[in-house]
Length: 131
Image (cartoon, rainbow, N blue to C red; front, side, top):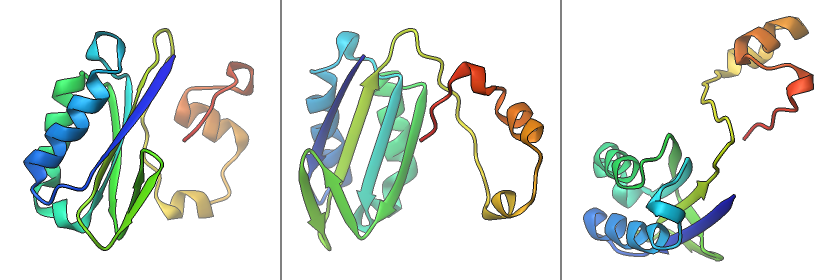
């Protein structure tokens, strides 16, 4: 199991993506990530869909989670109000990873314990971890 991260302050989205990918890929076994997190400033919002596809393809990422924000933290640094793109990637062989989406209304309902077990396909005996 191995994680690595990178942060770019490039204003051009393509340059920022290339910078973080080059840094992260060189530190991962087989340049492959099973799970990746990307955080981008609003400066990259217009190109965000393409950015995600490029990252997923380059790292063969199974699960890619991301968002934009006014501040971006990565590689032990924080950038606020300026262009920034952060990527954290994990090489997790022999780990089962599943993505799901919840709405606020899902959490406001009073669902039974078995509902959640069925919804996520896990039981407490599986010792799941959620991000």
